[in-house]
Image 1 (cartoon, rainbow, N blue to C red):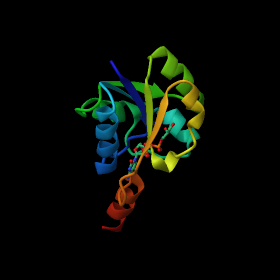
Image 2 (cartoon, rainbow, N blue to C red):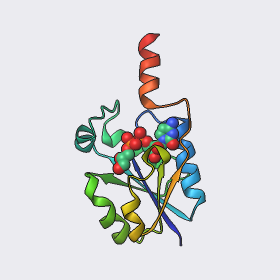
Image 3 (cartoon, rainbow, N blue to C red):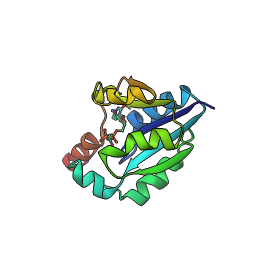
Image 4 (cartoon, rainbow, N blue to C red):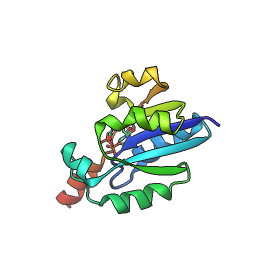
Length: 129
Ligand code: C2G
């Protein structure tokens, strides 16, 4: 079984999130998503609208997702890959190059981001209404 993993905040789920999860799953048989905890979002200086519990519930409901784990820090990826026997690490290409150190442990794939949509843009657009 080919196992895939990806990481992110996944707040205010939108087309870009669905596209990356769909394409990530197409690379294998099992997709684990590491969803950033609220504390880690604070570290990333990212303010999510939904708390971790809600974001986990929503990501778990997406058909392409087989498992959701918490992303607590930047350092856990190698341990996750080894512990979960991950074959492919996937991220959007806004992260291109940032996780190449993981090539020692698994395949690293950066997929094109979906242009024109982001959680931040949704919040800004709603604020203007
Ligand atoms: N994404 C995308 N297209 C968009 C927006 C996001 O393909 N229009 C992808 C991102 O490239 C990322 C995933 O969706 O691979 C999740 O994006 P975010 O929730 O914004 O996560 P991020 O803040 O990038 O956190 O350790 C990695 C970090 O936790 C990534």
